[in-house]
Image (tube, rainbow, N blue to C red; front, side, top):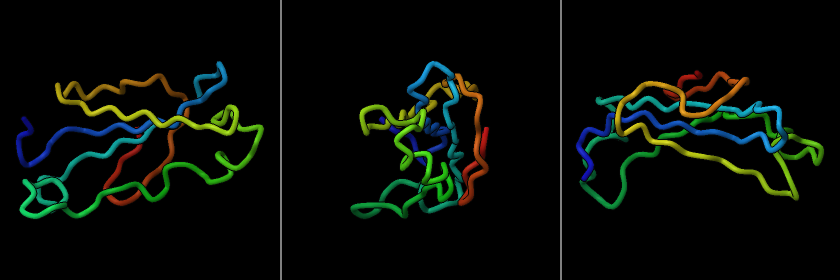
Length: 103
């Protein structure tokens, strides 16, 4: 059962599919005052997102460490225990907008 307003950090990870562990990780920190994170009163709430998660050429370049056999993986972790720690080993982070913070 979810409690509202939704207060759990959401981690997104574009996985490096080589052995370099250069994952791109971003975090969405909920804002208790945002309509995106309050108890829904209709079929859906306002969207929340990250406008600059990674450069598009990271996914278009066939030699990209983020692509393998034309497939990329995005892992999502919701920190229901409020540990505050990065669940992914990463060496790259990207500055994000729209309320999202980089690690």
